[in-house]
Image (cartoon, rainbow, N blue to C red; front, side, top):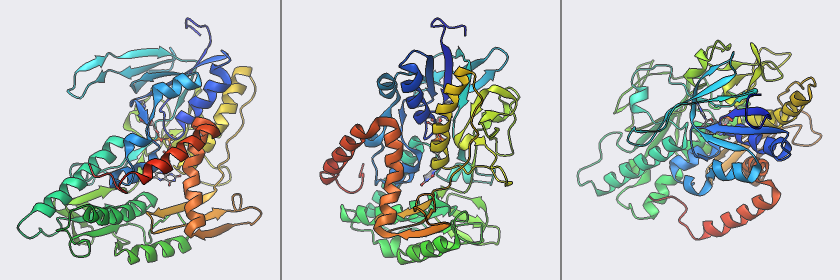
Length: 443
Ligand SMILES: Cc1cc2nc3c(=O)[nH]c(=O)nc-3n(C[C@H](O)[C@H](O)[C@H](O)COP(=O)(O)OP(=O)(O)OC[C@H]3O[C@@H](n4cnc5c(N)ncnc54)[C@H](O)[C@@H]3O)c2cc1C
């Protein structure tokens, strides 16, 4: 502990679904009582819960209204915040190194900085895996960050406004949207985009006829959509998508993207000037060279069930960037917000045990089920016995109940960050301001 305060230094890298919850809770449990110093590092100044990004992309959510300032959260919850992007560590010296921070013009305004840690927790999430498929990086949109979701939204507005003002007929595929990957992100985004087309016409882009001009296609390599979910949910979801005229192609692997559209291995061309890639994830590339820590084929740091990295007991990893085994199976914990949330809660206890020199608890993933929300049209999913009370196995839910449970996932995250009173006030504020705004962000 070579710091001025002499306190144990906990560094958490990444203030996402998991990292911000951990920093907030540790701030209260340890930082407030001066039992340890907690520092959160993130490469952005504000947090937005990642599962909301498809709504930001479609415009149903304004990212500026739902973001949370790390500086404010740190101030209120007794931890430090450092702006910066981790790119290397020195395990021997127990030092992290943050790359220089640049402004929009590429000028450096914070030089490289190194910090000493006693315990390091890495929670840097994941990015979309484009599998080096030709053209995907250049021509497809991604939804990994708030900037990307905002950029996609601007592209959408430009495309629709241009089409509305265009005198000549629309080009083939001009307002066609292709989404690669029919996981929950792709499916939910498709329904949000369907709704967005209608809202844009309602709010004045009347030369566009959604039924005639807009076509949304989801392309999935597996033989069903939502491959990770039970068949019943896939089938229900296909039916709901069909009602919205959203085309679903399964068993089709994309092997090329161009400005005009996507090509499949079996030779089909899907004309689409707007393309989103949501097919698979990997952990950020820098993790594979993080001072020799063990990683898997998608760069995830391999951790034990205690969430300690396999080669260094002072470094923990969790959330999407970690490969945590599920005992008794060959599987690893899935990259989901509910796993990041559960692991953050476990790590709060583990970090206190670590300070007290007690053995750490092992993490067991508890699947509470999955819900797929198709804008205001439909929500379907299954709840596992744990959430559905005493019933064993999973229980299919849809309609209002499913929608309420879906909303409650975000509320649980908010509760972990703000506590019940602030969440109540934020919810009231949301209800009031929603009445005073268009359904969609139009700028
Ligand atoms: C559109 C979309 C919808 C989703 N919907 C759902 C859903 O309905 N249910 C569900 O369970 N899951 C959903 N997910 C998955 C879910 O968002 C992730 O599993 C979850 O966010 C993982 O949490 P995390 O804390 O590991 O990472 P993240 O929440 O991604 O946070 C990572 C943080 O690390 C920061 N960071 C990254 N690199 C660095 C670096 N080098 N240095 C410093 N900081 C860094 C980032 O800025 C970010 O704040 C969805 C994902 C997407 C993209």
